[in-house]
Length: 358
Ligand code: NAI
Image 1 (cartoon, protein in one colour):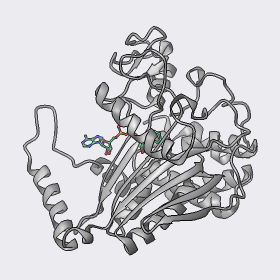
Image 2: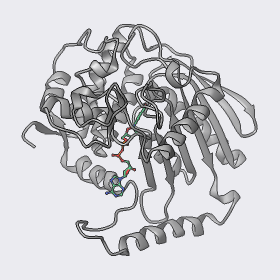
Image 3: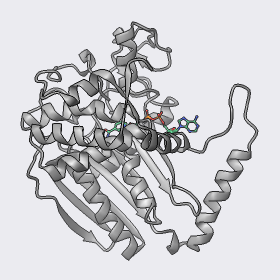
Image 4: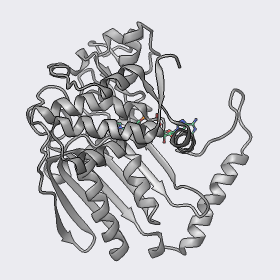
């Protein structure tokens, strides 16, 4: 990859931390966000790694992310609660919420925790993996701004509303599933735009609601598997937005329109202690058996092997954390510079964006 440079994870973390602290985060907040973004890049989730620093830094510098939030946990029952994030950095707020949920699930067996008023929280696998490493089954989902046409419609309504799930194993890192509910990330359309490359007609629609292969004509993304992905998006928005009394659907604040205001986003975390249902060791051994049986499944033509969900990310992580992480040269140069870019992301129309985002 000629346009990338291999960066040691420690260096990447330090560069990101410095940039975010220069933009206005405390050192501690900047460290938490940096750790998260390095995790994403190391896991091969480059759409949610260091590429985001430019946007975060501009929003922080413009006051659209609260750098002094008082994050509080309101216990609403023995196994439910709300974390009030006061629009602090998403990675800080949701990590804190996940920690509250872990403690609650260990005590009560189940924790259903809503996160109210957070900023963009990045790759969700980070949080569910942390909970599964504590021997819990974890589900996390969040709303994002409107850029997807509902099935059969031609105006955008829901966001790319991701869902992540993790379960612990006996002999290995947890199995983790983490996906946007759209066929493709918005970042992939931007990539095709920059290369003037056609996209498959299954990814997005133009302003008339017709499937398009021209990335410059994209007006809305398509849900995965038509009405099924559309239904999942609705579920995510109801659980992570409506349930908390937050704006939902097309009313969710835009990522790029006004960087001076907090985003008021919601997230939902559901943690389950397997021990309340079955023997923990047996459960974890069963997950291992499933992984083994999936590996033994004969591959179809054109495939080398069957990977369990999240395995490819784990393989990337193990390799990149030891050998270094491939980072786009322009991102690395930006991180090394003293610059904070302004007015890169202040566009009324997210689809007019030339930067990377989702
Ligand atoms: P993706 O399409 O790259 O992967 C989706 C899932 O499929 C992953 O669990 C991956 O491990 C699995 N997978 C991929 N190839 C596989 C293979 N060959 N065999 C078996 N499993 C395989 O993910 P996507 O949809 O592009 O999402 C990327 C990230 O974006 C996620 O971390 C998500 O949380 C994040 N996101 C965050 C948002 C936010 O507002 N915070 C909004 C939307 C997405």
